Length: 266
Image (cartoon, rainbow, N blue to C red; front, side, top):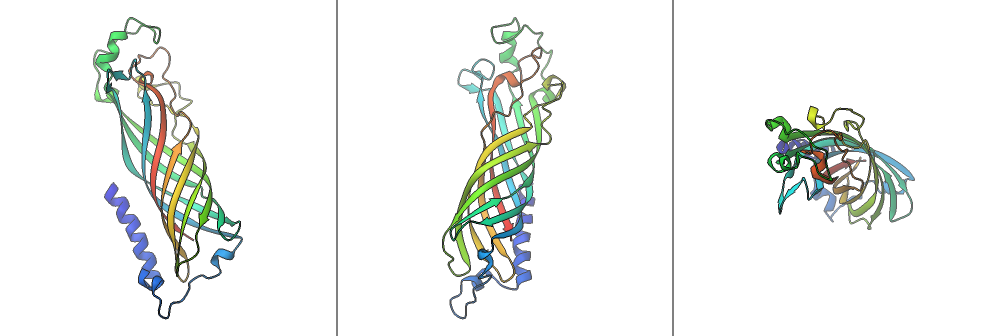
């Protein structure tokens, strides 16, 4: 999957260079150099689209009762690589500041492993933290390994600050806030992990930071960038009270963190 995403993004860069009939050397040459899109950044509004290769993971704080055995963590999260795409809307504020709205769609999968079976069974008689329960006769792969699929509608509002153009390039940094809707959250489902349904919150909030370099071709602007997105709310929806505490009671808080390699076309 990782190699496929890298190939897709590499193809996009090569295709754009081929269509323009120029290389990055043309952008930076000093002899007979032509400044591309000189008036592009003077527009009050502009638009475009982007492609993203993503790495989403969970940052978890585990319960010391059900989620840890001494210093050993009993729940593990494995990140996977995924793909996203979106649109770009930019409003020029002044010579050095732009306001960007970049709604996108990200398809995400994370794998959670619960090694809680033997540890949690000692609490079958009930405690201050859980009701009495009958231990499962066995803990199968379906019980211990949860595949959490998410489809996020990501709506970030970013404030961008950039330097002066250097030939046909310009560095920038941006930061802002995100509102994210998880279309596969299962938040309202009545079933839980006992029926192999892992539930998370539908509506989420976060913040993003981004750095990149804008390259000016004769017909469009290409921007490779790196973005980090960090959720601020706890996404975990606890299992039903009568469900044995093998799963969500082992996790106190769970928040998404993502690293994105972004290619923007404007």
